[in-house]
Image (cartoon, rainbow, N blue to C red):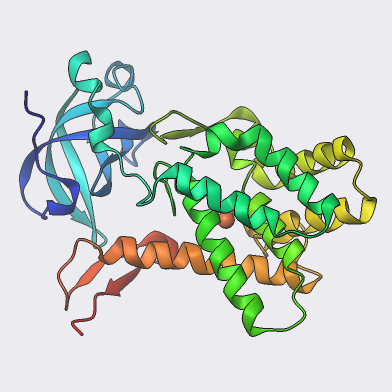
Amino acid sequence: MKLEGTRISELKAGETINGIYILKDAEIRVSSNKKTYIDMILSDNTGEIPAKWWDAGEEQFATLTPNKLFYVNARVDQWREVLQLNIGKMRIAEEEYQKRISEFVRSAPRKPEEMLEEVYAYTAKIRSSEIRNIVMAILDRKEEKLKYWPAAKLLHHSIRSGLLYHMVRMLKSAEALSGVYDGINTDLLFAGVIIHDMAKIGELDANQLGMAEYTKEGRLLGHIIMGVEEIEKAGRETGASREAILLLKHMVVSHHYEADYGSPKKPMFLEAELLHHIDMIDARVYDYQNATRDIEPGSFSEPVWSLDKRNIYKPML
Ligand SMILES: [Fe+2]
Ligand SMILES: [Fe+2]
């Protein structure tokens, strides 16, 4: 049996295509001329694309189960320089094909078990037992889900095992930086890296394929507030000092830096400041590499939303 169609990375403006994609998100909206339409995000293992199903309403919306494979017939349009699909027909794939959905999912390029081992190796380097115990208590609760959890529903590292991949790359970055500058408290920095996004397990609900939806708690609180609660709980359980609990909470609280991005406080000690920048570097590296992976050297990418809609260039050298 074959599951073939145009891959998302191969879509070109003006073409009419048949493809098989995962429905990541769907919402009913009302257009300026008062007609309903459905706004979607579709994905496969080569990328993601927004899609619009014009003049579709509740009846069509009822057929759209997120995180399932769909047959899609569409025209590829370009709107404000971004490619999007204009859906002609769309229907859910048969149950026997749904079993092969993992072939359409992008995963982190490393084995989760290996990455998890590295996280434990960094945890073992934390000398302060009270900080290490908090990290261990949190890891212990999250370990199973951490193996496949994505770091986001749609943005950077929204792939299977993306959260763990993000964590491991940041740990390496943190270790390298602490070799450049003297006086960095690596206990705090490693702990901060490991727990900063850990409450995404809870903010999001993901399946074994790393495909995620926001939970009610995630929407109402978010991973920063949820992370603070987890540190409090783990700190009490392990009998950590108020100072250790407070420092780790501050790192989680300030890691998005700006109130607009969910941080009520900006960093107020060095390791918290560094955590933010290491986090940004990893997200940026991911976004640049993701934008240029499937394009020719010498050409520009589609505008990247997370990089202020810049068109990213792939150098020929
Ligand atoms: Fe975060
Ligand atoms: Fe992060």
